[in-house]
Length: 199
Image (tube, rainbow, N blue to C red; front, side, top):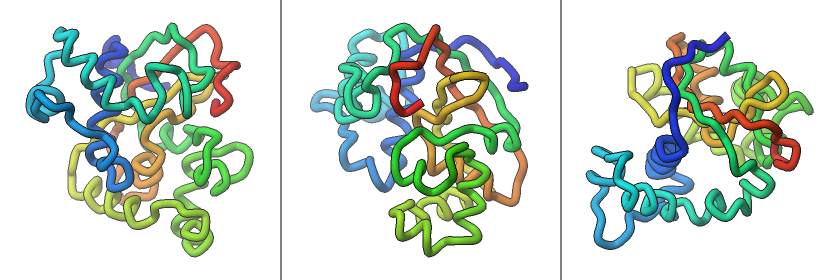
């Protein structure tokens, strides 16, 4: 069972999402600091009580469709309670990838992150052919093993399991690493995720 660290919030979840996008070689060019703001005030030293800054960070994720419940968030519940939890790596390995390529095509229908990490190790050519960001995963793995801290994973609690909302590559990298240290995850809880097709 995960360890509950404390209640979280939608604004903190969005902050972690933005941090992850800015660290990502795939998405950092799309996640732009808005004119009139600095990275220091929005990301590095954020004030989550500042409504204007919270709105600016939300706007940085417009291409993800969170605010409009479109794109990858189509059907995602509007009312979600967020908590910060700490998981062992074994528990993270039991997380499921969202139903989105290339992650959902990398593994079987159970979509387990632990199986994805094995595929990266054992069938790397296939992973590359599916456009899994193998180089990025290996880079994160090396940094994780050396003690680097990353943005928290974001997951949804769905049917007694956890589906990754953000952090597929990082979760895969953590599981395939040679170290074993807890991982913090912001978890979303809602009455029903049945309308979210990626669950």
